[in-house]
Amino acid sequence: MQIFGKILGGFFGFLFGGFFGAALGIFIGHQFDKAKRMASSGFTFQTGGASQTKKQAEFFHAAFSVMGHVAKAKGQVTAQEIQLASMMMDRMNLNAEQKKEAQEAFREGKENDFPLRETLQKIRSITGGRYDLLQFFLELQIASAIADGDIHPSERDILHIVAEELGFSAEQLEKRLKMQEAAFRFQRSGGFSGQGGSQQGQWQQASSADQLTDAYNLLGISEDADAKTIKRAHRKLMNEHHPDKLVAKGLPPEMMEMAKEKAQEIQGAYDLIKKAKGIK
Image 1 (tube, rainbow, N blue to C red):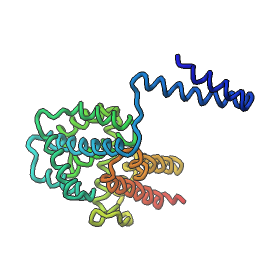
Image 2: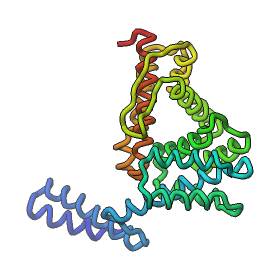
Image 3: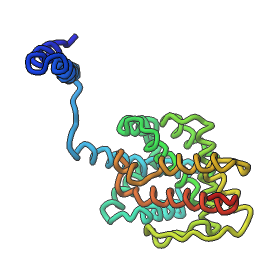
Image 4: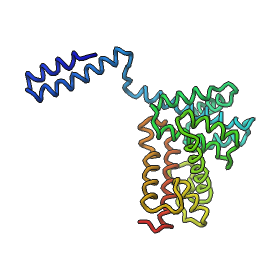
């Protein structure tokens, strides 16, 4: 056990500051011993932006390669699915070089020997198991699968593998699928209409009971939920999907636009429910 630092810290702390100095010295010495122990066991700290940038690049590459694998689940990847992937790249405002990298990753995912589980395990590792980042990765795959308006059973099977490797249960996946399907319908029905992939959007007044139902499903709550439950669900989802927080934790900056759109969808559903319920 490493105690040399604590002994020295306590000794010199006592000389210069009495009892409180000794306590402070022991604490500082403990940190020294801890760092020394971790270093001797092979643990090293990675500082600076290089490590973060590398992790973001790996997250970006894995996201599009898994996306390609999910698209291939139905069999031959169609021109429509490639177009949908391109639309997603446009929503991220990727430049030519970034699009090329995303396309290459997408093609990798279509290969028969694509290491899906290994790729997902790596994502879990580089994110440090952060729930919100892993959730965003899963939702990205769901959004890609449902972009054509329907999820094929084979795509669903792949999504279950994705969820499992990222640490989500089958029940959690099905709940996310239901929420994402509701978000898709909510957006298509006029709940939210993006403008050219920009940050701007326009929330429109609900025109049907179906749209309100989708708003409840988008927040993952029942239609008889009380005001406290509704507010809590909104607060939780907004906290999980806050773009700045996600980027700070390792989300590639290129995906920030999609995080913003997700936050706007959540806010739009909440505003619709508040109006219908008369919540202040």
